[in-house]
Structures are given as C-alpha cells and as structure tokens.
Image (cartoon, rainbow over all chains, first blue to last red; front, side, top):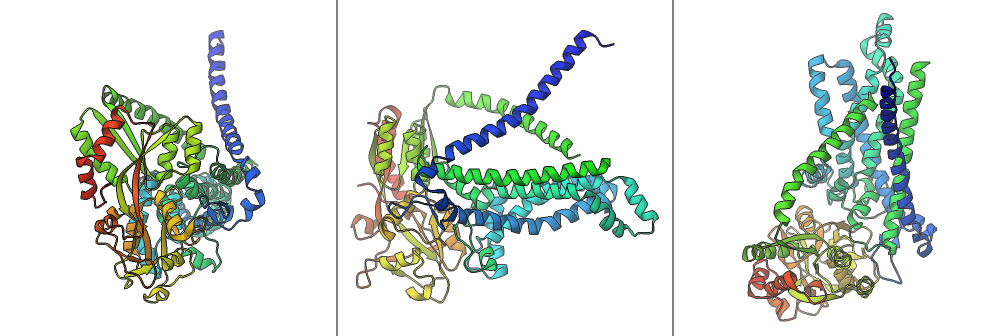
Length: 304
Length: 289
C-alpha cells in the first residue's frame, strides 16, 4: 500500500503544516521583540520609575515641564473600561450560551447561533459610531451626567463587542459536556435547571473561563470604539470609583491609536507609545495564557 | 469545537484577503494610469477647506487626482518629512525640532500662508456666558476654575473639550492661551477631530471647546474674547481677523518640500489665486491677504 510517492506527499504536507504552525510562533515572537526594541531606548531619556508612576500623559508638553509619559492614567482607563465591560457582558453572554445550548428548541438554536456570530463580526468603527451618537446621550440622560463620554459608555460598547465572542465559545464548551452527564442528573431526579447549574456548568467551567478571558482580551485590545466614546481624558480615580466610571477616561489603546500616526520615528514620544505597546502585549499575553491553561485543564479532566 | 471555529475564521480571513486583492487591482490601474497625483495631508482644522479645494481643483484640472487626509498638523509635518505627502497642511508654523529633523532627511519645508482663521471658543447654546477674558480661559483649561458660576455663568460643572496632541490647534491654544509648557488639565477630554468637539459641545450643557472659524454653526455658541476685564469683547469673525482685533487669529499654512514645482506649484498658485480664496470665504475662513 505505502508507495514511495505517497510517503513523499505525506511528508510534504506534514512539512507545510509544521512550518505554518511555526511561522505563527516566530511571527509573534518577532513582533514582540520589535516592539520591545523600539520601546527600550525610552528608558535612557525617561526613567522607568517615572513611566510607571507619573500621573499625567502629555506627550507634547514643552520642556522643561514636559513631556509627561505616565503609564498610570492609561492603564487605569483600560482596566476600568474592561472591568465594566466584563461585568456587563459575562452574565449576558453566559445566559445566551446556556439558552442556545440547553434550553432553546433546535430551530431557534439554528437561527440564534449564526446571528450571535454575525454580531461578533460587526466592524468596530460602526459600533463606535453608534456609541457616539446613541449611547453617549443615553448614558448622560439616564444617569444625569455632565457628558456622556465616559468609561461607562466605553464599557457598554465593549460589552456589546465581547459578549458574542464569549457566548459562542462558552456555548461550544457547554455543548462539549457529554450527554450522559445530563441524562445522569435527570435520572437522579434533578430538575433541568439543577442539572444545568450543578452538573453541566461546573463541567464546562474551564471552557467558560477561557471564553471570558478571550472576551476580555478583545475588550482590552479594542481601539476605535474607546477613542470615539470615552472622551480620552487621562485622569486617575481621585474622586472614587463611581465618579471615575461616569467620567471620561483614556485607555492604552486609545492613546496609541490617536497618537501613533503623528510621531516622528525615534523621538521619545514614539518610544513611549511603543512602551505602552509592551504593556498591552504583556496584558493580552497573560489573558491568553490563562485562557489556554484553563482549556488544557478541561481537556485533561475530560480524559481522566 | 473552539479550535475548529478558529480554523474556519482563519480560512475566512485568508479568503477575504484574496478577494480584496483581486477587487482592488483593476481600480488601481484605472486611477493611476496617466493622471498626476497630489497628496495633501495634515491639519484637521483645514481638512474641510482642503477637500473643497480639491474638488474644485480637480474639476478645473481633470488630469490631476488630489487626495486629502486630516489627522492633525503633526501628522502633516511627519508625512512631509518622511516624503509621504506632497503638501502638508498646518494650523501652526513648523517647530524648530521638525525643521531640524526635516533637514536631516534632506527635506526643506517651504511655507505658504493659504488662509487665516480665528480660533473660536465655543460653548453650549444653553450656556448664559457670552464672554471670557484670556485669563479666565486659561483658568478653565488648567482646571483652576471648574464651575461656570466662577466666570459669570450658572452653577454647573465645566466639561473641557480639547484636541489630541497631534493637533496644531491644540499646540496653538497651549502656546497662546495656557502659555508654553503649561499642561492642560488632566480632565480635558482630547477629541480626535474638530467635528467631535462641535458635536460634544452641542450635546453637553456644560461643555466648552475650541474650533476653527469654519466649524462654527448654529448648534453651538461662540464666546467673545477680552484681553482683560476692562477691554472690549471681540467676536471671532472674518472682519475682526482682518482688522487685527481678535486675540486668537492665526494663519493657516501649506508646506512643500523645497520650491514647489509641477503639480504642487499648479495647486499652490490655484489655492492662493482668486478661485482658491473664494472657497476660503465660502467655508467661512478668512482669505490669506
């Protein structure tokens, strides 16, 4: 059976697949190294401790006062908007996932799933535009704010973008729980909800966690929407969490997105933006690692 | 399951790139075949003006394709220096550092005044405040004053709108109102485009912002500026720029790399000629002379 020709073909395909896989690893490493290499010279002109602790981001402020390259307002903005987005999107996405996988009849499920996935592919500029003209005024009127451009508006829009991602992946995880688990719990006299809550969801937990992490990753990395709806004021939460959430913030991605095209190659401002890139890279790397780790744990448990 | 869907997504992405490539090719060929192109980049204040110029210019010169992009004066200078644009629009003069880095790259920016502008301070129409002194304006943008009642208005927090650091208008405002080296208040919301300042000020009752004269419309109210409490309040109008009484009047520039030649020269002569300057008036800016 095994002719030499087929052996060659097999090996060739193997080679292509292998180099494809390696290429993505090499690319990611190269990109990270490039970002790091462009960022590092900043530390010669602007000490790391100032980058980490300065309270302001004013890159074009004239010397001797400026420029200021403070990470903190950017990091805080990213954190606040993302945390808000998670708090809003996770309950919504999980109920969607549970409904489509466990409760909805077949025909409805067949309709819902592609629609949810379609929602995940709406371009972010379109979502940002909707946010700027519809959500900003709504948030402002609803909470009696001075301006609708706020972390809250950003969280709502990001939740809108992250929820479909979380929902589809969480649904896959729930579907992967063997039928026998559900049958077993029903046979023991549990109601359907008891079965979902205490058997199916715990079994799917690692996959659900991975889904949440990937959703968070999408929210942290989103740029266009936050530029358009958060107002981009680089402030720290001096007046409490609720005040901060209902006022303008500036995110890491927003800063990079708004400023990257204008800086001249090699000047400190350019280095500082790459340094923000390093921070962003590290954050998304950690989130992906958590997602991957929890998925792996799930696989091992299913096999055991 | 998850891996499978990711694979499908990757496949779809590859498909899209392939399709886009095919679709883009013929279009490129038809536009670039024998038409001269001119890329104009920079100041967001000037982007509507430059677009109006480009439309009329292309009607008069059907063999030239002009592309106009905004982004801010910094963006324009960066593009001119890296030879990514033929013309840089700027709402401020070139900085010494920029001239230096241009010289390093063998670029010699040449300056042309193509219009004038009154940087206008705008507030929401519901705001009772009609005039501010330069000091009050500075106090507002450095957050020394955070409530309208301290500058003669009603008891309401001030919502600060400013432009991103790429903006020449932002630099101009910083140098002429705050003072060079004085930071904006951290609470100032930095908008990526002038149009967003106009819409923000139109939406929020306590908002203040600054825009070019051509962006004034009836959704916002322009503030009259005074040098100090005792002097006359001057409105941002064409007449007050021409007679020199408006405090935040400024020239609007276009820069070329060296003495302009070919298409760039035709463009600049046209822009500074009667047709170009008529469009300046039509868009509510002030003619160069």
